[in-house]
Length: 293
Image (cartoon, rainbow, N blue to C red; front, side, top):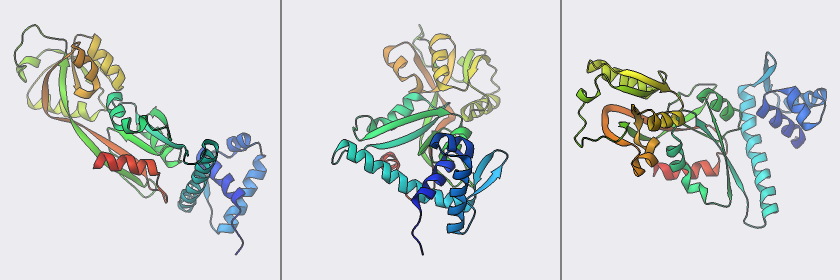
C-alpha cells in the first residue's frame, strides 16, 4: 500500500474547514480545478467520498468527518511543532479557540478562563455569536470549545458532548434602597418596572412561570438577550433587574446596585460543549478537568 499523500490531505483539511471550494482555492493560490482534482485523488485512495454538495457549499460525509478528525490532529501537531521551533525548546504555543454564546455573562466567562490568562504557552482566541453559529464552527474544527447557558442534544450528524459546569441562582437586583428591610416576594415586586432577559431565555421562561404561579403582574421596562446589555440596563435604568449575581459583580461591590433577593426556583445553568475528536485538545481536557474537579 502506498504512503498517504499529505498534500492531498492538507487540501482536504483546508476545504473542510471553510466548506467552500472556490474560497479555499483563492486563499491557497491554486486553481479550483486543481484543488478539486487533489480531493478526488484522496477519495480514490481512501475508497469513499469525503464531501457531498449542498447548493454552493460542501458538506462532509460521515466518513469525511472521521478523516477530518485525523487530519485536524495531524496538522494541529504540525502547528505546535513550528511554534515550538520558533519559540525555542519547551516554548510551544497552544491555541485555544473558545466560542461564547452572546447571552453568556462575561464575568462568568472570565472566571472560567482565568486559569489560562497568565500562561505564556497559551494563546486564547474568543469568538462571540449565536449558539447555532458557534456549533457550526465547532463542527468545522474552527472552535475547540463552546461555552453556553443552553444545553445541546447530541445526534448522528452532531456528535456534541455537553457538560454541565455549574448552576447559579438568579437574583433581583436594583438601585440602593433607602429603607433597609428584607425584600419580600411576591408582595414587593407587584407592579414594579423590570429589566428582563429576552423571551428566548431559559431564565425568562422560568421567571414567567413563577410569576404565573404567584399571580404576579409586573411592568417590563426593557428586555435584552445580550448579557452585556442587561448589565448596562440594570445599572442605568433604575428598574429591578432579573440576573445572576455574577453579571453585576463589580456594581454590587462598589455599591452602585443592591441585591434584593434570590428568586426561588429560577436558575441559570452553564455548559461546556465540545465535539467528538479522535485527538481532543489537551487544553480543553485540562480546563474541563479543573472545572469538574
